[in-house]
Length: 111
Image (tube, rainbow, N blue to C red):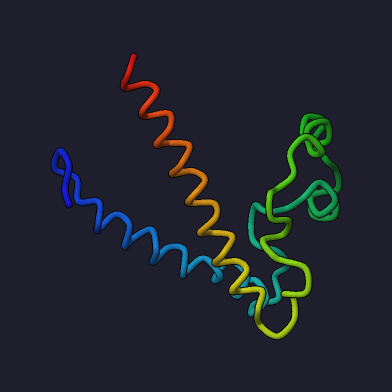
């Protein structure tokens, strides 16, 4: 399962491990009562933390919305299901990046 010296099986195993570990980003801030995960603040949260929102961030903050808002699905925020939704969001994200990378690779390879 190698191509040009790259072991893709090991790569996908490590990606799967990282996806499964991703909920630590939700668990640890809650455990230490530190608020949201570092760097995942919206404009409102940043204003609370820093006291202001940079003009550029304010201007583009509404430009992009996540496909799966807050990494969760409606009704999954109770009973520990938020971690499952976080893992599913990771799988969806990896699949989207892999698909776009694959298509771009095919297009660029032809040129």
